[in-house]
Image (spheres, rainbow, N blue to C red):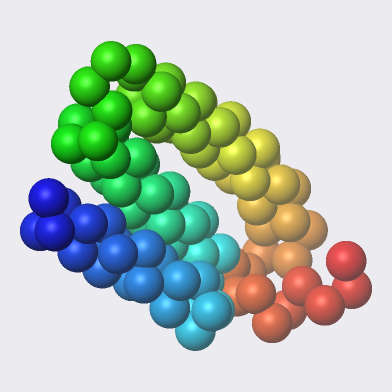
Length: 97
């Protein structure tokens, strides 16, 4: 159980550091997806080892996957609109939002 929790924590930390220190919009979106993946691994781990009767952890993980897909679609559309205006994927050039 602890190995899965460490993998989830490691993915969450990689995503957190990537979203804080990276200037590229696409890499920030990928980092946010890493954070959601780490959370999902922890939910499924707790559902497997601690919740033998209900499937609450699996349902929440499926809900987070759906939210991640919608979030990625909206963010990519916003990035497309910003990229057509500025012709750059650097976050520092988008200060006039």
